[in-house]
Length: 73
Image (cartoon, rainbow, N blue to C red; front, side, top):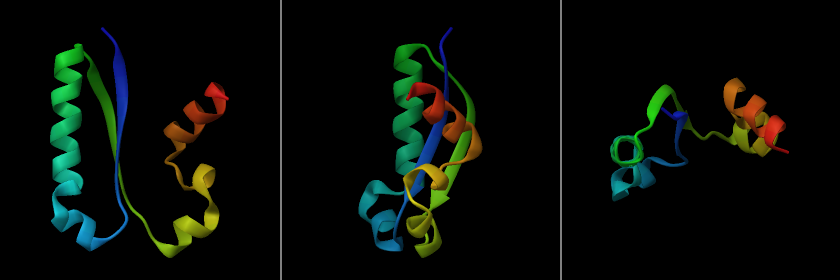
């Protein structure tokens, strides 16, 4: 059975209120995983900060995602 790591992210409180928040993302990922027969091994949640933007995309990812990103390159 395929596995996945879920990564949820919002950049503003307004985005969370707009229906694109963490809970909506979690529900969408759960529906997708179920439809595809996938198991979610781990979940990461990020609320973007000014510091994360300064670090750049690669350094801002949680470690398992960073490792996967590097392997995929």
